[in-house]
Length: 285
Ligand code: NDP
Image (cartoon, rainbow, N blue to C red; front, top):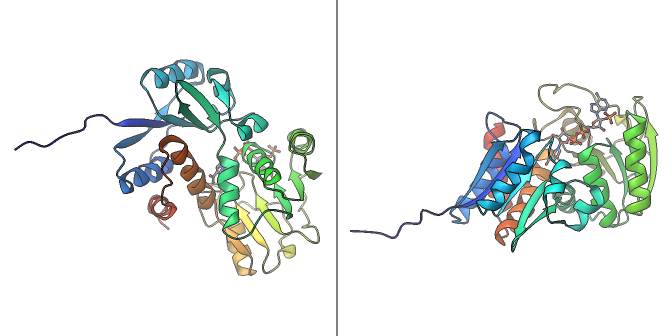
């Protein structure tokens, strides 16, 4: 008795920091299994000094693509053959895709966020309050502008990063943007439709850290989103639910950026429920 065996596996990867159990790997490989793809997603620690060699290795070994996480999201660009529209506007890449013999950098973070936002509301014409001006905020701000949001009030602790992002949003992404700098509790402007935490406040292990936000302004029906994936139920998520807001947790963004990445690599539109379930298993929710 013999049966046909396939020893070849398509490879994709995450070049980033080592973690005990990589939730993204669990999520992506759950989708590969569900869709009968004989593929692997590897988590590979890459020292910044070795990034060029790692990308050349991925090229030589025929990887279909890879994700990049901190600290490689900007540095990887010099090793690629081109950028998609969002990655080019943001100046950061979190997903690399092989197209023919070229490696093209995409940014799926912001699009993943907007895709999860669309399950609750259309961003077009919406007024947004966003805390944070780092990489996640930049990705979300640019995609919200591309999706037709009307205005973003940006709140950030440091003036420098706040001003850089506000200028990018106004000048390149062409959206009205007001900047509030400091650590005082931010007031939610009248007429705000969507409130977003795009800071790292609340990320494990500082799960009880408080956001500089006056939450008395949260109203029933308002959409509140938190990018923090671990833990998925942050202080903000809990408080917003208690106040009757419509809530998106950080797993929504993580699942959707994974959905977009798998589609880029394989052409398959993966089932997000299988991917979310894999993440929930990792996080024990
Ligand atoms: P960055 O380090 O680039 O930015 C962090 C931001 O948080 C900055 O605006 C920083 O302000 C602010 N911040 C941090 N600590 C404080 C504090 N104590 N008080 C006030 N502001 C603070 O990180 P990223 O933007 O890359 O990531 C932010 C979060 O988004 C992370 O927790 C990450 O896990 C999450 N993320 C989630 C994704 C998902 O799929 N769910 C995808 C990508 C990121 P300042 O400029 O003053 O330093």
